[in-house]
Image 1 (cartoon, rainbow over the protein chains, first blue to last red):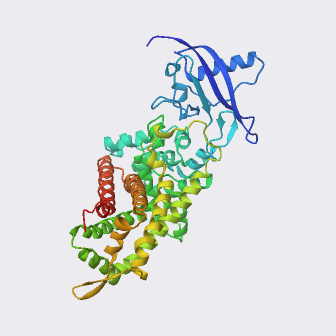
Image 2: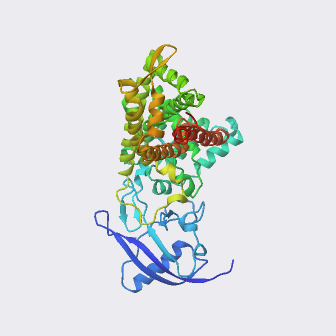
Image 3: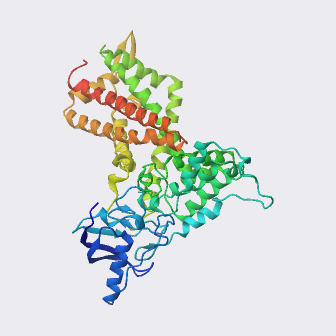
Length: 256
Length: 231
């Protein structure tokens, strides 16, 4: 694809802190290369703002390789921007053309309160994982890797679920602000494998309970989460979680 | 985990919606099947007998209690879910994802359900209340008196002064039901844990077919009276 430069208008959400009322600010950026990543374009804008003596825009980022799940911009009404299966850091400016106006907002959900500008607090995801998104492993002799026979199709499904980077795009896209795609990916990659079986029931119950406590909404199977997920996590994981939760919840005793 | 913790959790609420929804889907089969008796075109003899059976025999009367219970559960839980889910995002987006991520009807289950509820109230006042609590004329079939529910349908849809308004309301009500079912049918099976794409695709197809057949059946009923296809 041919390289080109572009001039853009950005409408970016600015908010001093969690207690302040935010609003949109309009910025002009010129001579943006089509080969830049979206975050590099923000770096250019922030350099420009610093030179002008203004405060730069705060945004989350870490690896810039599409695997850490830190970047979290809601670009022109879509989490991580217009490209399918892409994080914001891997979105490149060739997705836009000269003269475009780009609206950038933070993730919107009560469970993801804005910290500053485009940065939201996603520690609610950490607490969901802490509630049961793990396997307890006893120390001792290392078990031979081939002692568990796992079918290729199952291993692939577990791996696909494990690629969830916990970025929160599913919550941002969901009309109900539900975290069920994230949660179900985190239960599925363990529930599909033998190592995840002993804690399977408890995991589903404890993680759903924590999710509800954090103030996420209820899933209504609209599929928006799956459509915007940068790792293309499948919505069938939610069905697996539903089944696990129903089975575990119905089987659970009240005296334990 | 006790029952209340189970059914008040976010996934438990989904299960309530799915199970009551499937019960109501089954009811629609009974409803459209029984009403199809009007097309026997025998002046309503078969239809009035079927309606009499539904009102007089204890089996459908007991099932009717269950039906009302499931209707109430589905309506109340649905409204609660809609209100709770809307409250989970205090500040909305300036630009919405809209149809890029999901189908409009899957995001509109609350609105569609509310339209169906309004229609349901009108529909119950139109036919169910007169047939259970009086207000219908009598007709003699095989020497026995029967409520003439058929005559009431015929009056509402082909003789009543405002019949065109009534029919527009029925078309809007059934259209809302159609889009509600297109999402609700397949969604309820996902909620029950359907993960296999082969069966999910089958349920999506079955959902469309079911919604089309049932809703076309319902809408043909007032139209059959309006256009005089049955007498």
